[in-house]
Length: 183
Image 1 (cartoon, rainbow, N blue to C red):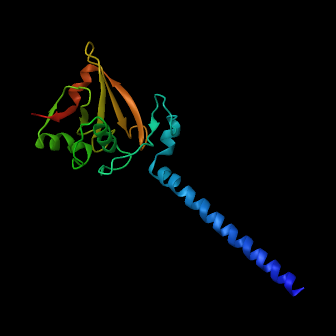
Image 2 (cartoon, rainbow, N blue to C red; image 1 turned 90 degrees about the horizontal axis):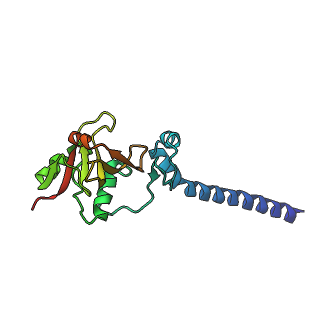
Image 3 (cartoon, rainbow, N blue to C red; image 1 turned 180 degrees about the vertical axis):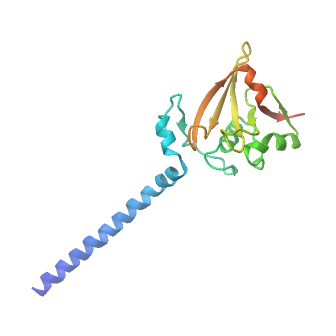
């Protein structure tokens, strides 16, 4: 009888320990998703029908790699443009700060800055109530006949969400465009 009680206690103890271990593993596996969710405006993503891997016009939650030297804030526009320029073989410094200071630092470091969009240029807005401390995006297309231009951007439809916008030619005058260094 005593042996049966001891076996029963050992079995109960084993079940409790197993439950604690499984619970801990579940929490550890859920932490990365919880971290992303805590930094992402899930409400905006759902409202805009954005989901991881979505390739529609509403945007895509970025799950790709980031260069080790990308010190810009994860999921923000500056983070994305740094990646795009590096992918294109035209890296930029990781020291330009918030988007509103990029044109200034670019000029100081010898980059050409004007109001003309070209493929590979960085569109920059210094002050914008919608984007907070400015906004940057990567110019992906320019139609030579109409002047219409397209940008790839991040953090407009949600933190770490990439989308594209097509802009009318006349809107280029509202923005700075950072090109490669002047020779």
